[in-house]
Amino acid sequence: MRREIALLLMALAALPATADPRYQTVDVPMHIYSGGWEHYVGGGLAAFDCNGDGLPELFAAGGSAPATLLVNRSPPGGTIRFLAETPQSLRLNSVTGAYPLDIDSDGTLDLVILRAGENLLMKGGSDCAFSPFQSLGFVSADRWTTAFSATWEAGRSLPTLAFGNYVDRSDPDGPFRACDVAMLYRPDGSAYAAPLALSPGHCPLSMLFSDWGRTGRADLRISNDRHYYVDDGEEQMWAMEDLPRLYDAADGWKAHKLWGMGIASRDLTGDGLPEVFLTSMGDQRLQLPAGNGRPEYTDAPYALGTTAHRPYMGDDGRPSTGWHVAFGDVQNDGCDDIFITKGNVEQMPDSAMEDPNNLLIQNAERTFTEMGAESGVASLHRGRGAAMVDLNADGLLDIAVVNRRAPLEVWQNITPEPGNAISVSVRQPAPNVNAVGAWIEVRADGVIQSREITVGGGHAGGSAGPEHFGLGPAEMAELRVIWPDGTMSPWVERPANVYATHAER
Image 1 (tube, rainbow, N blue to C red):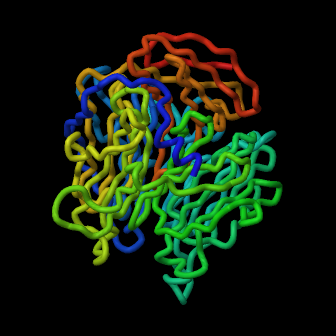
Image 2 (image 1 turned 45 degrees about the vertical axis):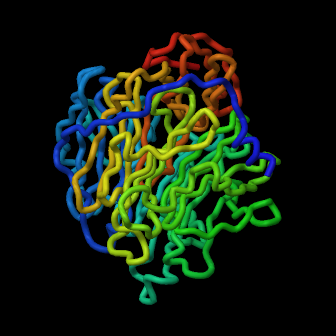
């Protein structure tokens, strides 16, 4: 209760009045995520720069249709523009999602591609060329993969990879009580050892490695779909010890059961510990860490305004279905907002059919107000994966969404008179050149924002690139990095509205 009250009442700084967020639709090449039962879930979107021009491309899962790479041809600061320029190596069917990750630490982002079938590790080359890795020893079975996360464990030359597998399609007793196990790939030298099964599996739809307690070790949180685990499943967190084990009540872990779809984490309170947002079919849950050194979380109070449990427009009063979730400061006022894609699984009769995306704006009282309709992002398509990133280097976060059985949508942020911002890119010597697991701290006007660099979460897709921080009226900011090994860089001062500030070790 102490943290709940603090979250509601905390005023880190007096916030200036800012204009309401505004988005406009951008025409993009046609892409639709389609398919039958195996593609009711999934539909992820990866955002990352694969040609070195500083602008993120979009790689969209297609389900039964081919995946698509949209190459960013936007003029910096101008109208967002994409061209469909998918190389043959990425024109893949049965893709459920994808995550960008520099697996071999060569400075070029690679792709982890999730499929209803064999998963792929694709090595990035020049000008968005991709080819399968040949020497990593990675072997994927034919599974239905719907979740992914990665981290670098100490002393490893390659990232540790976790794949969440949904229903075991080969189980004759399926689909109910037929959840598949997750698979953990740990490197053995310069290649991957045989994967370790993380059992039991409860039909995951999102997972995230995070150093939730700032201990120097990332553990694996998994959000599971109770539609299929029926009675024995729950949300999970694996302690990444030499032999991973599930946290339980003795550790402080409380059992949570929900129709889990997506995960995102962000420090909203300024105490340096990340809160966790879980989307689901029924309600959306912001969970607050107890801050006692134990993996103990409580649901945020309803008054905070984050449950987003029913549609906010139209007359369909049935419960909402949330999928991808992302934090980001869309007005650059120094307060992180929340974007959630919404949409019925297919024809679930107890869930809303007209279910608009949410844009929850954090206000000066540190509560959240729904502004999806007012901002222009209230699509009624069946949203799935998404990305909230700066697509045209103007310092504002844009939004892209993959829809099931409807075209991909992109909205350009045209908020009038936004606050200032800074974008921070970090780099260190190999391995783990993009410093996954590091924490960036940005200080402006006496307020510190803390951000963990992670790979995973969302719904079947993620982003890689500079971290965006809204600064409000501040014209200068200080930043430092706590590197994955715990080394702390000194504070350095940087001007606002510089969107490629680098922090190198």
